[in-house]
Image 1 (cartoon, rainbow, N blue to C red):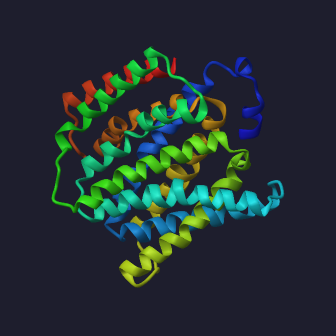
Image 2: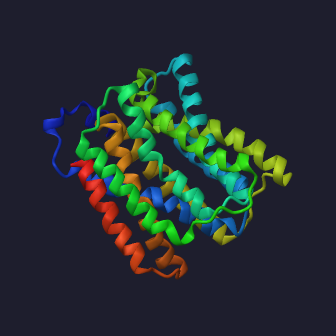
Image 3: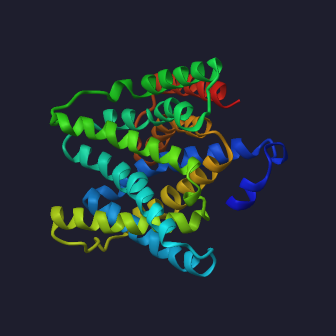
Length: 298
């Protein structure tokens, strides 16, 4: 799918392709927070991320070997490096920050500054210049995110380096997104690249889980199994596949702008699954964010 879609010239793509991909990206991106929260009662974050990446990589491995093109060692090493940036540092950095008591609301807000970082990097690194209208849309979307998350924001008592870690993790993923669009060695089928990314990260998460827990054994509970299925099928397969495919087809700032909708959609997930209240401020923030994303993406 990704190779065919990439090969289509912009005028040949159906008008509904980007809205459909943006919808899948937002739903999948926001589902990751929900899946981790659901399964976190059963296991430590590092153990969760280890099993999430290991299971994802092992499922993709037969397809990557049997149906993908033959890869050079140079291409595999490039994919491994990208996986460390986009999966291990990004997911692990935020997980470690939460473990050091950085407030979850602040972590989510910094995570959702990703589109702003990508927009800022796109011009010098990719030559993709945003128009004044797109910068206005980015600012409006950011204001909507602040409105949604305002009630949950607090500074907390975490060490200073933990706050810096969240910013670094976000910037590393933004840089990885730019590299994915720029580097030819990263243009392989999505199922092959995602297989390498997840298996590489699973080794690193295994070391983290072993140091913190002293064991890699998963909890044999139904809740853990359901949470893991959620994280593998939706938050990993669906989300990363759509994100990487979209990066090959559309400007990086346009793709990342959809992520601004993740916080309000996450609030809806939390209301539906955990009975968390919805406020008028959240709905107002959603409306403002949607306006900003529309201005940026149209």
